[in-house]
Image 1 (cartoon, rainbow, N blue to C red):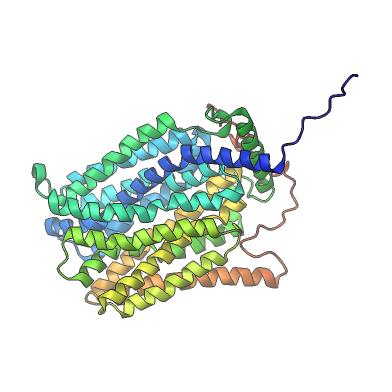
Image 2 (tube, rainbow, N blue to C red; image 1 turned 180 degrees about the horizontal axis):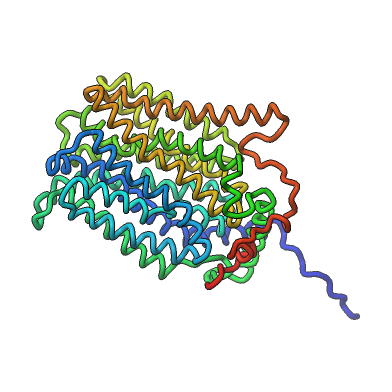
Length: 479
């Protein structure tokens, strides 16, 4: 008897789930470790001035205001170059551009070891910001090309664990370098901090270029079935986001959702960056006669706890578009920053409070980034993510400078300077709550939910070069 052939059998639910798990496990193994290490090194190279400060003060003389300016001038260059950097990345591809960024900032960071005066530090900190611009938004954009929506909050939290882990590893290491390598080969300890921070970035840039796969369609390390599932899933989500995303690079500057999230991220960073740059000084001030190594180890504890908190939170969040987790994290940081400010005379209580504050402030970052990546797509994603990150990181200049100015003006009152972090986080919560309230009052969606646009996916396809290939999961032009 002749057998009539029908369509291919649809995989059972268990088989489909196993395919998804196996695929994403492979992707994570190939993508996440290198991104985490690279992002951690980038963070170390921007914050290691917090330990170099102690040696620079001896070499050149530096007030708190001057240190705040040196720490913050990095972000002026970063903000100016951020959006252009990501536009270029869309055109040339993440593999080439992120590799270029790493090599460039590594050269500049290492070169800071040989500056002759304080003014040269200002110049190279500005150039370092220009060199590093686009790296983190590039990572986020790259992850959207590999991870479906349901997995993205978890993977962003995992990659951003590099921030606190950089503090866990970098603070003790910088303290050891400052104490141990001082005078080696005629270089002061603070110069070794910059030199040893820059060289790994150059090496990682070369490794990144040689090993990274641009898009799933090029992933020969996936089976044909795995590759097809991932390309199909990502393409469907890209079409859905494209219907709601600003259509092109210029449109993001007029999108109210993007501008509102710029404001929130700026305030969120105002509450986080001073802690990063001033924590070693706070620990040294509270701890009295601690050595550089001891200050490093003590400063590492809050960041270790923050890394654990970020890891667990990323796996507990089920609604990647909800703003409630961000609000909770910010609320915790407000309360514990306040406790820290009023308890500096009680070292044990102050240390516990600042540890919890660090956990809240650092965990808020990956929770925040699940909001814009839920509705931005194509060229709008490249420019939108870069705009939010660049304007948000303007806080990296203003807030450390404000903390230094308050300390100088108040005769070194650390508790008073912590009002910068407290007020910033309160305002961030107020903006999020206000946007939610306005949206609900108008019968619309809350800020963490994309509005209906009335556009079809076909109408929302981005016209810029490279957008069509991005939607289809293929390589950008020239790749």
